[in-house]
Length: 534
Ligand code: NOJ
Image (cartoon, rainbow, N blue to C red; front, side, top):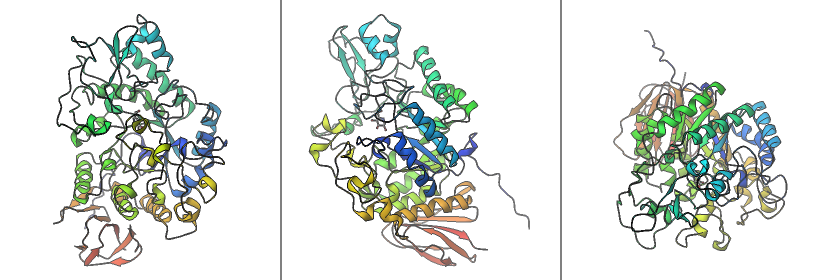
């Protein structure tokens, strides 16, 4: 009998992505080395050994560039420097060198959809309407009857337009007024960003996570967006934003051409480009990673979902079938409530993550997820996120931005002083030190999952066959000599493994190493990775 060996699937031309697992560091809240209550680059460098121990391959750092901080760094006032509150360019060099020594890659965040209103380009655009910089942004005359040029909304509420009183024109901003959107139809803007990318690639960064990649181009005529549903007066800004079809302000066709241009800049450095794209439609999202475009794209939808097993399975299997290799899977980041809270328990979160690890592409964890952390507790008076401070209707994103809990010292070892955001101290069993001592902790379960994926590349690499089951809350995917069964439902699921002898490589609720044959039960809200036993 001959066995055919299928060509191993790869993620793309950047070979180092194959088999990799990513980890998001929210720099402000990871580790404070200077004692000012704000996380910094030297703090991250000091914790790289921990990330390597966990099994992380790619570290994504949220923006650390100079910024007035209206949106905590996503309002950049200089793309080629470091904000003193987060360190210096020398700290970047040290961080990159240490990460590379440890065999890890580092991806920075770039924010090309908008700058800070403090950026010199915008300052010049305001001061001199006849300057070249004016056309770096989207200034438009008022609507014929007065008021904003169209009905577009900002994600952070209310209108996407603010008035420049001096000229009588409005500027467009899909986020805060302090985050004016760039005009990506202007060749000078494209050239500026080529140079920014090169600046950092020359310094040794391994790639970029591209903020709001789906927002770059706007329809040249700026038509009104169609409203899809009416929302209550009490609706928060995000709900209001999504009550419109974003036909003319998001996901415009020409974005792909911009990605191809960036890829030409990144390719010689073997650097990776990863989209933050709010596109939910699987086929449209797949275009972002079509040949020559970006290397990977995040799929953000599961990160916004509550516990809904059937829907979660549908989304994961649906997208993995449409685009099997170039998705960055994630259920948690610095914008979304923590999955242990959103899903109702840490074990549900790990069950979903285990399924994610058996899909092609690159799974990402968000700091603290490996501890099974629930949302941080914050007094409403101490909120910082502009979504909540500028809208009485919204709690905002602070709950997932509280400091990393390293140990049981004051402020959980994040900082020697009160952190920039006040939150309840985490108990010992919710800290890295506390869980490190306990072999049954979430931390050790996650570490094992990362290690299993590394040692059994079939799990993500071999040709996927989704096995049909009679349950919509179950997914079963066979890849080479492995079989992953995700039973997110509340009833046990039995599966017939046939005559082969299998071993449990990883079971999200424990039971690793057990052997299995014939009909086996997968417990409710559990994902099991089996491998054929020799
Ligand atoms: C997505 C980022 O993740 C979020 O934190 C930020 O507020 C918006 N983009 C705007 O830059």
